[in-house]
Amino acid sequence: MVSIDIQHAFVDFPIFDAKSRSLKKAVLGKAGGRIGTESRVPIIEALRDINLSLHQGARVGLVGHNGAGKSTLLRLMSGIYEPTRGSALIQGKVAPVFDLGVGMDPEISGFENIMVRGLFLGMTRKQMQARVDDIAEFSELGDYLSMPLRTYSTGMRVRLALGVVTSIDPEILLLDEGIGAVDAEFLAKARDRLNALVERSGMLVFASHSDEFLVDLCDTGIWMDHGQIKDHGPLRDVLNHYKGRDVYAELSERR
Amino acid sequence: MSSSVNLDAAESPATPSAPPRSWQRAFGDLRQGWRQRSLWGYLGWQDIKQRYRRSVLGPLWISISMGVLATGLGILYAALFNADYEKFLPYVATGLLIWNFISGCILEGSEVFISNEGLIKFLPAPLSLHVFRLIWRQTLFFLHNLVIWLILILLFPQPISWTLVLAVPAFALLMVNGFWIAILSGIIATRFRDIPPIIASVVQLVFYMTPIVWDYNTLANNPNPHVAERAQLAELNPVMHFLEIVREPMLGEQIFWRHWIVAGAITVVGWAAALLVLRNYRSRVAYWV
Image (cartoon, rainbow over the protein chains, first blue to last red):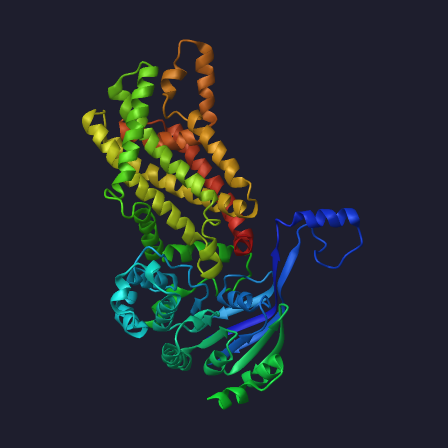
């Protein structure tokens, strides 16, 4: 059973190197807003009181301004951050594609990176070896896979990362923006694969600023604002609410 | 390809049935890390290969640089203490390579989470994974350095006996201790960034307080009672006991069981402290890095 169940979750980051502020505050007294908190260390409330329940087959698009908490929410869902208060219960095999530079070694070849990435996602060596051909075919990287990763373009890295996560049958696929670096042709291919994946066994949560990608991949939307969920519902409604115009109509016009 | 196996292996920290601060989650983290041994096994090798990428001799440099250092220091201190080269050279070399493992675990242990910031923030994985990788990497270094010991033993035969087998459990005990040190100092240092430089300076000092380039028994039996008394202060240095349990069998020296007792006691206390810290602050590390 694949599900994400988040209740009253807070993610508070202590900022240890901003101590001069609290000292000044202590001296100057009452003036100023609520930047810090009662404690000595200032805290950034990256997520506040998140309540969310997602089930199998969900295809969720995350929208919101920079710094609204999209990436933090994705990391909460992946289990990297455990909520400071509240609870987050995640059931299912999680595969995140966040920063494309991390967990990839620029000095080793594409093949070896496929292996490392797969092992990080909980696969065994044998299981990954069985999938290498499939990933090579899907990513269309061909002979390039034996070249060190530092020779790859951003788009090629995205292809590799998407190839790996989609080949291992994850149940919860978390994508952060950045996969926009691939060309339209490949994206169409990836979309089919992602949709098939979600239908088979899982759930997709995707943060993006690209309306086209969101409309292509998701059916539900979550609007994050200042660390809180401002709106949650069908993607079309959420996008209209967020942008203040009918994005679907615009897109279909353009096509 | 059974999916149940996949699921089992992939149970990332993202399946919290227990609250973040619980023994269950702390032990779960360790179990999880052990299960991913093919990953840290691979990464540990990669770390070593990486360091010597595109060099002609590759990881052989580890052995060579250790050989140069051990021989140089061995000759220098043998001359200073007017000791026998045949005895002193293997003594210094063996001590040095054990010390290298210990100091490696301590120094890199305090930075184990800080230096893996990227991985911790972007890929869900048990914390202990990084510690396993560190201990494994240090073990590989040790095995490379062991070649020097072998060469010196062949050149200058030592009275090695059956006790040599004791070196294996002794080294295993060293690994077990490296593990708790890395967990404990790693978590604390992630929160308080002044810890790594403090540890670095202390470790440097401990090198000279540990009988590596000097011989404890020679000084403790010094005819001058003041020197003998001061030398005995080395007993207070926990590193000495860990060093001795490995070095004694490797050189065929007499085995003093008190070193084993001290080392065992430190292992128990250290692990208790590390587990407590792991239980209480495991979930905070991602916020602190």
